[in-house]
Image 1: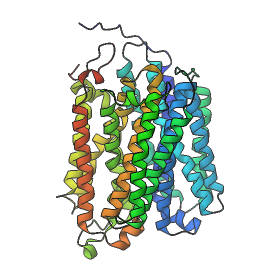
Image 2: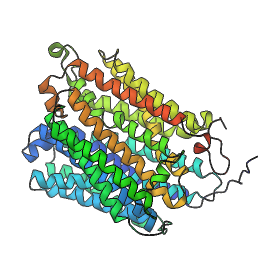
Image 3: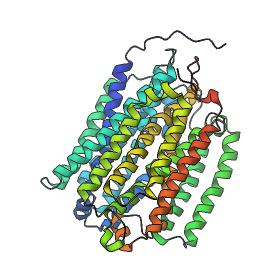
Image 4: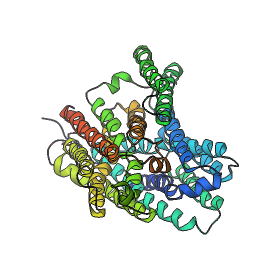
Length: 485
């Protein structure tokens, strides 16, 4: 019979989570603030709305490329120090967007904001380490992650409402300065509020492995961008994707021989890690890749196209708001649902909710209430997954690998989103931008394909979690994972 450790209080945990909540508030502002003002941004930069698509591409690329290095640095020099570094880079990028004299400069600043992708994984790693001797490490980590993600989603709504209210009355540079100020303030809060603990990993940076994985990811992303712009028949695009996939072969071989790899391939292939990382990859398809198609469908005029909701930007904001609120509900109720159903069953149930929500779009997409219902169902499941995946990765990683394990949940999610973005753009016969999709008059079959792929990806994620051994979601001190506690 397993020995159960006596639970102990964790001094200062509430304060640490409070400071980390501030970080996620900033993250939510960044994620929600700009979406309602993309048309005004295009006017400010004297570009077409189609060119706004490059914002997403640039940030996805930088996010995917920086995660391995920043996650490894967290394990080496301490998660707080890397959190400070990533926040400083994000703040610099935010201020560049304020003063940028041209589209190119603005794009550089926008891409630098992609460093924020590592915030949540590092925060989960900080909580995981802080609760190590509590006897309830995984439970407290999940609770902390749930609070962080709930705060994130609520901040998304606040950010969206704030920018929409200010953009018509203030100069654009003043509007853009607000998220820059928020990130700068959060940088100071992290500096003074989070304790500085040394890293636990040995060795140094595996520069060879970093170069190989950066090259492989970069080639794949470049190929996807070419396909997205030129269409499914782009031979150069597919050639780049194939070359990038093949480039992972020497990377894996190199990492297996390296004593301190930038990405521990053996860890990722372990029974407890691969289902979590595969789930994150598949989850990226609906949670990130499926958002633009939903916006374009909602704005389509049914009198002209024969489908769509004929929505204006105000209703699109309402749709997004309902979705984000249900994301917060899914995150905040995670501790309760894991207590009722166990960790693995909760994650599987969350995947099934995402699958159901997108599957409902296929027959039910003609009325406003149907759209709101579909997104609410998917949102509850998505919120639970956003909160639980980094914690699940940390639970099955050794102490000196928690940074890379949690970080890669966002890395694989970003790759999934990038691939989905290209595939969905092809299905809708557009560049992926709202303007382009509207002008191309994408067929209804394209949207049905998008929803079917999103639903199928979530179902595959549920199957991946079922393939994991039960002990992968159990606390080391005896916390039950697959039965109600």
